[in-house]
Length: 252
Image (tube, rainbow, N blue to C red; front, side, top):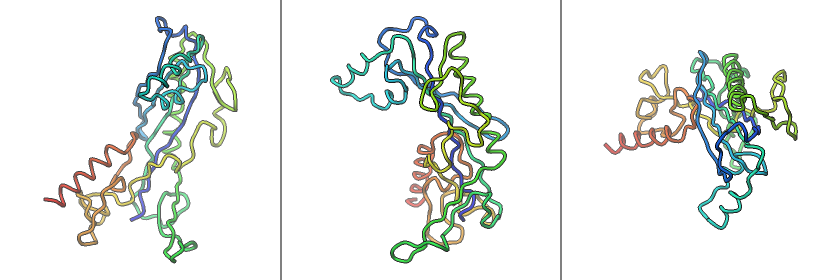
């Protein structure tokens, strides 16, 4: 219990591409989105690709402000950029967990009760340790490379500019940094899972396949903590499916 803590490895690339790269594009452009899946021997990833031709730049900004109100929608659509289409590629890759005993090694991911901090009522606070493995870094690097290749392929022979370090650049951000600027820190995506992973063997899992704890009578887990692996997609639908499965089992 507490081992196998997993999250998502996440990167965000913002760019803009000349409108000429998209022949036949209408004058009024709202927003578009696509999903591109990929993977390596180290794991799976997917790229969330959004595009919009808004003058303020940043396709995500327009995507998440689209609201079903015509009074607000019309100005958004009218704010088109005659020269550029803004695109954003958000990469999300699965993180490798680990169910084997490793104590409280700083190089592994786990959660436990803190021996140093307590809440106001004296209950120990949760202590979360997140760390990437070599395989995680390999997968993360492959995903970043695929994201940049997708942007370049989309632009083709047309001009593309990348947004980083506060402005538009003709070249993508450098990849030599220990932690590249387009990556998000571990634990910032709120997709942690796996610490009460399910399985059929009480010696190799925390709960059974219906979320019931092997070592505690009449106690169940019913959320993303049941995941043996986290996958690359957002975990909400899988978590809801598992919660329904657990509820139906208890009700039966």
